[in-house]
Image (cartoon, rainbow, N blue to C red):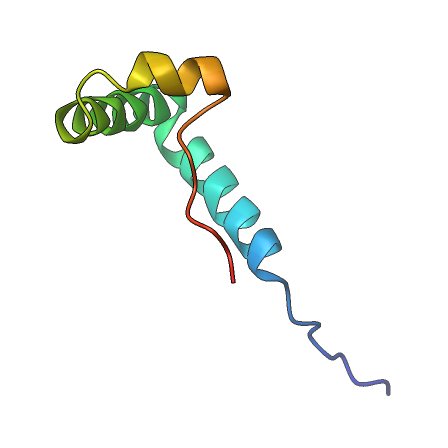
Length: 65
């Protein structure tokens, strides 16, 4: 008989699988709630910057090395 080998999944695939599982478990409302919480934290940390970042296409990211 042939052996069944498991192919390792990438980090992106694992994240997608986990995100879809969370979506089916908790629903879209959960994602909306955590998004609002994140937005409030960003407003506290960087007051007045959301408008400027939105015009530039989003919050600047750190440089990748």
